[in-house]
Image (cartoon, rainbow, N blue to C red; front, side, top):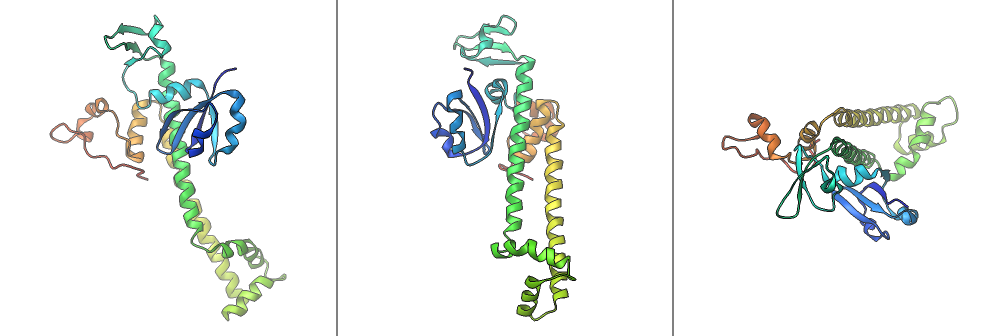
Length: 251
């Protein structure tokens, strides 16, 4: 049976899965392979995960950020024996190969899906932070308050209780509840719109070079120096050294 490949939001328990082989583990994203008979153990993971192709899982990770047409690979790579792509055997045992379009596309695919997971995780955290502004008791009763506030002509036992406790009218409580709900929804919508816009930036990229720019701009992952040389006025200082890149998320 064919080995399966998965991309997941990082979870330490991945290493506990029988036959799991971690291929990539950076930026909160993990790619691993696992034998089919152990797939049932994936329910141990605390985060979400999804199956990807071997091409994306094995080679998309290997060529992350790669802009060179010719790369060096070890004898474990099938390209070393492929007459169409193998160019030169090197003294250190590696082989110079021409990177096929399939590998290039895999790098693009992986850089996009990894960015998607990172962006969604960050905005999920921001949403939870927004929710944490209210107590869990308040959150538990929030829907009931909204329902009563939208139907003051009906029974409003919860709003009556709140009004009595606060020493204000039921209509004032209802007005405050609806205003608070409107403000919260607007904040959530702002977060959601920002997340969609950022994911679209990555999704619309068609080259590794474009993705490298976004990964540096938003994720703090420095692009290859060879790419910086293509636009030295933007990425290099007067001495030809890379301008500092702030690590971590920049959105």
